[in-house]
Every structure is written in C-alpha cells, then in structure tokens.
Image (cartoon, rainbow, N blue to C red; front, side):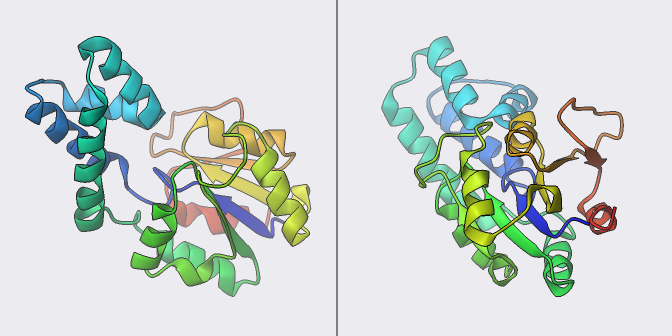
Length: 207
C-alpha cells in the first residue's frame, strides 16, 4: 500500500504551462518577435530553462527580456493559473485517508503561494522548492531528505509528475513513480503507473 504521495507542481497539480507560455509570447511580441504558440508550449513543457536557451541562441535576447517575461508571468499566473480539475479534491481525499501529500518542485516559493491561493496548502505536509539547497531532478537527494525527515519507506511512497525527470528522481530514490499524461498512448520507461486524470490516482494507492 502506498502511504506517501510526493507531487510535482507545474503540469501536475497546476495547469501552469498555458499561462506561462502566453506570458512568454507577450514578452516576445513586445520584443518584436513572432513565434508559434504550440512550438513555445512544447519547449516550455520540457523546461523553462530549455525555452530560455532556445530563444537566447536564436534571437540573442538580452537579460532584460527574461526579466520582463518573469514580470508578465507573475501577473498571468496570479490572474489565470488554476489547479487541474480534481487536484484539490484528490489531495484532500489522500489526507483524509490518513496518507500524506508532499511537494517537490523546481519552482520557487511561488508554488507554496499558489497552493495557498488554491486552498490546498492545508493538505500538504512537506515542501521542497527550487530555493532549497538540493541538486535538481533527476537527482534523488531531495526525495531522500523527505523520506528521512518524515520516516517514509520508499516502497510506501510514490512520485507523481508529468515529465521523465520527475519519474527518474523517484526511481533514483527507490520509490514508485506515476506519470500524469492525458494522452493514453503516452509511455515512459521510468513510470510504474500512468494516469490520464488525477481522479485515477486514489485507486492506485491501494495496489
């Protein structure tokens, strides 16, 4: 039985890629650059860093561009970004069942602020963000820290995320892994489970 759920944030709990990409498109437009939304969204889903590198190399954009993007993104996220449907209900149900929810994200403290805004913060126990001094995913250090801090056994823990680096981090920590991907044909060599909707997760925890 799985007792501990460790969540990624962007693309897993929060439907954040569209508002982040729209903010990026606005910053590009202000810089006089036209790009495909779908192309930018695809790279954003890989990582924001990959998108930064893509446009920096292609257009030679200065640091001021990325500062402007981050300013636009803060407003867009605050006004537009929402959790995925059922995210709040699933996390509440996990906590009500006596299980635990923890967060492990590369995003900074804004992840905690958004969980508070979503009304979900009370369903979470531990938080590791990009501001904590751990190597980035897929390194397992942050997950190993959570397991030691809370006495979690790896066989009773699962890492839930939308990207391979989330799953690899969980696998490297010895825990179960779950890919959240709406496409039912999607596969990952690093996923023990694949769900297309968050509402499917609670049934997995008893397996």
